[in-house]
Length: 292
Image (cartoon, rainbow, N blue to C red; front, side, top):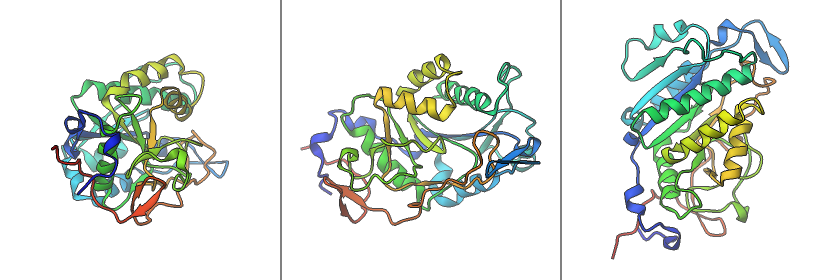
């Protein structure tokens, strides 16, 4: 295969390639049934659990899910009994109860989510992995997810970008295809325009400290997703896949939104590669060109 965008490659591109075993998957979660939910702007007596179908989708979407470095459930508040019964029997899923003082002074669901977001980044930095997929607990994954995701991650990591560490969202309600300012490569593009939330984002290890510092400094300013959006715009570190690889399925919010059922209408469409000018090509896996 002749890679058509050789001029965009870093000199050290080959040393930056990752495999699925270099990635750790983290989920924000909470005991939604222990609190009221919000659906269509109205409170419901109890929230809904989606984490079970989310994890089922992760394992079903691609055999490569069994190669990830780890799967961690970061419980933001409340008891973990809704997880213990289902996942205590397996070492593939690690359940992390909320630290005692995690939510001290955090009286709103938005603040509690931001605290858990900060905690997730701190946990990621305590591990040895090179990349992290951090997701909300009410999503599903496209069939063949890891093949497509790794092509996008590795092409992004191999390109000469402003930052060494970047992020890549797999969920978006916008349409990037055909908009030349968003074009970056065959498998990934700039994630500009309206930001759709923290449903599923890949993070290079190199950018975590910068994001963590920003979140701690601005914790009380905005909800977590808006803080990520502001940081990623400021640092020029937000990218996306042209077609979404993760879909939001939660219809009952845990209190961080009005309970509108936002989804990506492009999810599940056939995947393609894109040449400059968004010229559509049949999909082929990403490969670096052989050195001469």
